[in-house]
Amino acid sequence: LKQLLFKNPNEPPIVFHWVPVIGSTISYGMDPYKFFFTNREKYGNVFTFILLGKKTTVCLDTKGNNFILNGKIKDVNAEEIYSPLCTPVFGKDVVYDCPNSKLMEQKRFVKFGLTQDALRSYVRLITQECEDFVKRHKDFKGQKGTFNVPKVMAELTIYTASRSLQGEEVRNKFNSSFADLYHDLDMGFSPINFMLPWVPLPHNRKRDAARNTMIQLYSEIVQKRRSGEAGKTGHDMIWHLMDCKYKDGTQVPDHEIAGIMIALLMAGQHSSSSTISWIMLRLATKPQLVEELLQEQKAVLGADLPEITYDDLSKLPLHAQVVRETLRMHAPIHSILRQVKQPMHVEGTPYVIPTSHSLLSSPGVSAIMPEYFHNPNVWDPHRWDSNLAEKLEAGDEDEEKIDYGWGTVSKGTNSPYLPFGAGRHRCIGEQFAYMQLQTILVAFVREFKIRNVDGSDRIVGTDYSSLFSRPLNPAVVEWERRNKEL
Ligand code: HEM
Image (tube, rainbow, N blue to C red):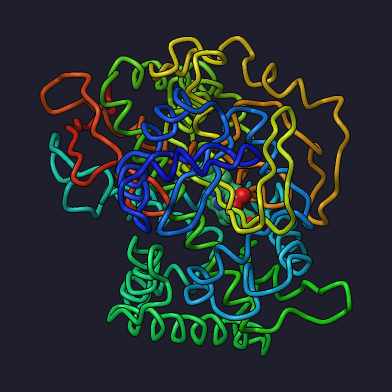
């Protein structure tokens, strides 16, 4: 009754709940998309719910995406929300543990390190890593078998990212010390840390120890390289960061290089391993599409399937569409949060969002709205055949551009498809992710046929318990090795 009687007409409606602090945390946490769509029907595109005691205003659809993701720096802030979770994992003075202007410079360093030449060299490394992986992995012995997709793809993703972006020393360490350290550090992103970042949980000690050791290991790599002990090989990100300078002329200190590398490892790992897992699981529901992909490779590259190059990837549109469609339905980041810093009026409504609220954007919602995508809950890479991607982005062409220091992007966006976000915090790993995912896909399709164990088109549910959503574990599919002579 209190919730109905004391409603402020200038604030968005509050989702009804029984228990004060818990609010809607549980129903949101179990299935955020169900929660968003149900409440959108009741309250419209803008509503507030209680998330762990905090008033959180959700703004949906393209206007809502734009309102939050392209919010001005004086109005919205990301670091206040993300720092308690991320700083203990990435370390001091990087990403959200520094002023936003410094993050923008750090993003510029990374973006400029992901040159075409670098990406070109990574395709070969990732292909080799995939080949070695299937040769040595216990689940891929013999002609036929099954594998637990989320677990196996998480391993493959980390090996491919470390061999390419992270460099040779890091990749070699993954055979021993790094894997355990990574695991301990990753515990810092457990759901409980997101909910109660200030509580001294037992696994936080391991997380902190792992972070310190990792920073030390990266710093040792940098020092060895600076001293000339390690000969320059490849285009990895550590070499690049060692050459970067902030605008004030200072070099990037070793602990910041380490922190940026840890942040890239984490950001890339969770999003890419979730996406490649969904790709495999979706393909297992449509084995004929795996054959279509192989045919595309043969038609473009020749029946003998020579080693794939970076330039070849752009000639395989169906492979790119598989990635694009998977990101439409399974964007790894379901909620993007910001703290309100100044009262913000939501255009076209009487609502002013006060500074006590945080804002939540979920571009994954517009990506499955029937207004924009026909049969939105059907996974169909062919929906992108007719230049849908260009059409969706066309609206942004004439729009005013804005330079955030790391790149120039549209000042606003009307696109319902934003798996990499928008505005100043937009992803800088998109090209790397596409290159990595497509290269793994090419290698897999050449080696295996896959299908669901029972031959059905059933798909596993989503685990939303962390900041990054992913398929529920286990999710087992069947593989069969191709007979290369045929
Ligand atoms: C930011 C998605 C891969 C590095 C973001 C954001 C999204 C996103 C939605 C915006 C977050 C926000 O506004 O708060 C994805 C997806 C990926 C992917 C879907 C793969 C399928 C990667 C990779 C890297 C990376 C491989 C590193 C090489 C970053 C960084 C940011 C970012 C540094 C900026 C964070 C900020 O400015 O606050 N990503 N990402 N991402 N991503 Fe990615």
